[in-house]
Length: 117
Image (cartoon, rainbow, N blue to C red; front, side, top):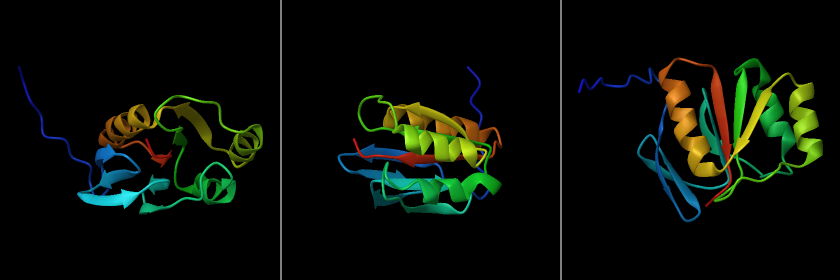
């Protein structure tokens, strides 16, 4: 088996998670949060579309982690993000964190918004 070291450039990967928190670049942060090329930041949850829409110039795809289980995001949130030009993928938060890391390692313009598990 061949192992390759992953290079995230200057971005911070999601190292782990637990009840109500995510570890980003070695630092435990309370959920909900958004992780973008600018780094991790607090997020107001599914009612806070503007924080996510502001990422439209920085990223092409936004992953939304809906907690321990996959769920639909509110129609108004999806509409606002699509209006801003963001591709939106919804999944459970653990899957969103893993997918974020993979796409980040590929050099993609990606962000993730995570609700706690």
